[in-house]
Image 1 (tube, helix red, strand yellow):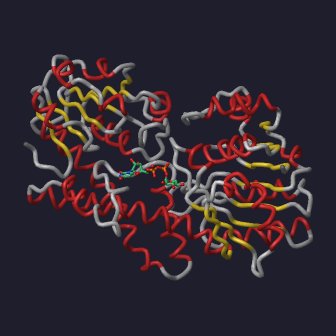
Image 2 (cartoon, rainbow, N blue to C red):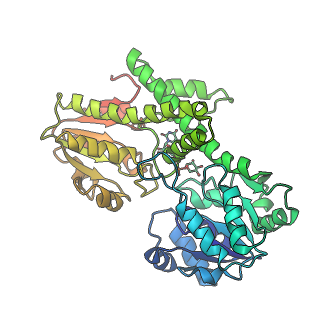
Length: 440
Ligand code: UDX
């Protein structure tokens, strides 16, 4: 078992640290945010991730995991994972890498020169090489650096960390066998489970992550573009997706049409990838990602249009119930949330908007205080002229439309995730409308 540091204790870092500690390693996780560090140390993560609070409770008790703001506490570690965020740069498409370089510089000041640095953050291709030269300058010797992208999904972060589809190891030119062997030791539990490990150069490893996320975003926008076509001809995109997905080469997953993608990864990754391609002189190669982004944004506009139509062409003074604020279920993350965006657009058109979300109401309120927030679905729907189903929480899929219909002023529901039981809602008297599906 190894002494490991994790720099950056967000979704990625906190889960990575807790899982490695649960597998027997001694882990110190560092974050500059004191509130986050004290929350995690008290088994109270500042974000909702199923199972994380319980895992922290188990692991912190063993003494193998601690959270700190003091980077000097990682001086004796053999392996340092860099897990800091690389959000979209303000007012630009590119990723903000300053936190990453700041963290690396702080680490270089305290780490043992023989220890291994492993980058996990999602970065513009070429970052590992830049990082290596920065570390080398500070340490005055070549540094041991690997790139090991992370593919976890929010809501499934612990499962995905324990059972990744693959481990990607980006190694320095010439490939350092002892670095690969050391990372194998760290990932002993995953390798024992039979996960495939793919070794490649730094640049390819960096690209694997952005290419994977770009492919996923493209798959979602493809089916949402088909939804637009279905809307034009009266077709049914859900049946279409089922039919094309039965071809193994296409596959059923990530073909759920609806309001599109959001969150802290897919939107900013496709934009940062375009920005990086432009820097590399190959901007046109990724032109299609601009179209992917556009299709995604148009789905939001479509829901607003349907809400307007349901309210007779004007939203001024209407009551709109919004079910869901998180960018997807099982998360309280509202970064680039399609649901919250639609709620705000509808509000700007003069509607009174009551939002319900089982987990994300507090984070939504912090960025969108102009909206009203209800503690229950009933509270959000009371007196509504239209109900918008924007994030497909299980709780909403189990709603009884016959109960709900008695609460609203007009029985209009727009299922922007195509997940409610259309026949049941219609039978209960609702004017049910989905995206890319016939209206009756
Ligand atoms: C994604 C990648 O899946 C993960 O591998 C990477 O590490 C980080 O980015 P995440 O952002 O947690 O993970 O969410 P994911 O479950 O992939 O969903 C992304 C978005 O796409 C959500 O807004 C979701 O609602 C939407 N989506 C997903 C669809 O609209 N349709 C689908 O069929 C699938």
